[in-house]
Image 1 (cartoon, one colour):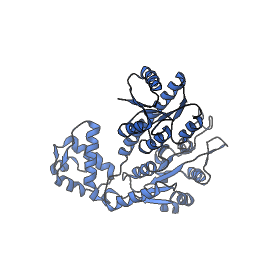
Image 2: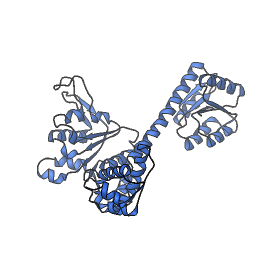
Image 3: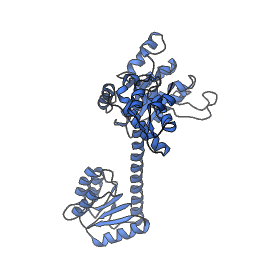
Image 4: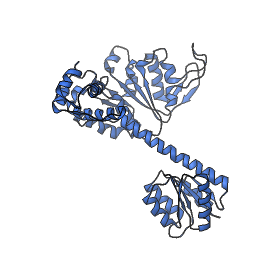
Length: 387
């Protein structure tokens, strides 16, 4: 049940606030505390969707309640209740993390608007946490091999910085998981994470996709359109398969990295952007540079930090962990019971040549869960996982 806490030492004001809120939010449980110490004790013990807190109270004033509560429940919205002469204190409390303040005696419309907005914010924060947990679950890096532990260690060091990262490795090895980990462990985690598959976009459209375009700048440009760099402003852009980008687009990306500015196709107006760039490729860019297909100056701009993701064949000790992970995920997605793999089945899968890497392993696990017995046997693997 949703809960609101009123921390107020004047019983009459508590009654008024409780009545007003109860009439507006009938499905909420309204709880009261008669002083700051009692209010803080209740916040310690329970989670509240909103706290209305008086400033001047015995035992512990409202500012102290706020300060201590922000350390243990930083996502709880506080609306401070200020009396005459407490306006400056109320404003200062907002700097400490309060969502809003109202004056005594409370104006009904002002009070309800403040409560509504604070509850909306709380709901958004909760939804974002759920969404991030789902994203993190979908982009979790599984493995305890030396190669994976080394990558995780690099991510821990690099993610909080603004350094550009170039991720290399074969198709299906998990380069996008590294990119997501870098973003969600960075200071930009609350900003957007925009992914661009450079190999999937026709060369004649890549510049429009990245930088946007103006109406009439080419056939089919029926309106102004922002590009991926603008969409990623304040966050991260992930240029997957960057080795497939045209030389013309490479030159423009280089300019973004040098000047933090983009220009839409068909425009001469510069647009300032604040974007961290993470790139990935399955190509050997040094060889592409030698052949004149990739700019050396762009390579050095992108590869401030270089992370090489190994193929699955280079980390067979992680296969049993990956199988367990995929079994649980697939069972969740399909609403079925997880299946076990026999030791013989796992050993056989460890000795496969995984040309499609982790992506291929997941497909094989899904196939075996559908077609195999309750315990996936060596025979099941021989029958249904054959190349």
